[in-house]
Amino acid sequence: MEEQQYSGSRGSGKESAPAWSLDPELRQILVCPACKGDLQDRHRGLACLPCGLLYPVVDGIPWMIEEEAESLTP
Ligand SMILES: [Zn+2]
Image (cartoon, rainbow, N blue to C red; front, side):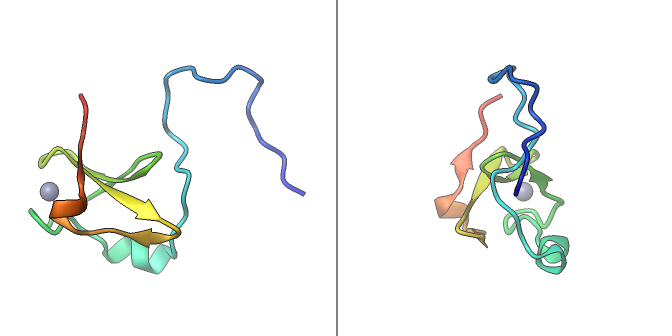
């Protein structure tokens, strides 16, 4: 049984908790395919700030494809 840690107020503007999970070893080796830089965990996927791209993680599979990446909104 899982218990959420939320205190009841939703939508406070923070998207710190990713909605996905990856094998830690896989997560460790993932880099941005465009600039080979580090990626940040975001709610919907992995973000590369220098490129301004968000690589979505779908069903535990990271889509590390530039053409499939979304633009990061500032
Ligand atoms: Zn990049």
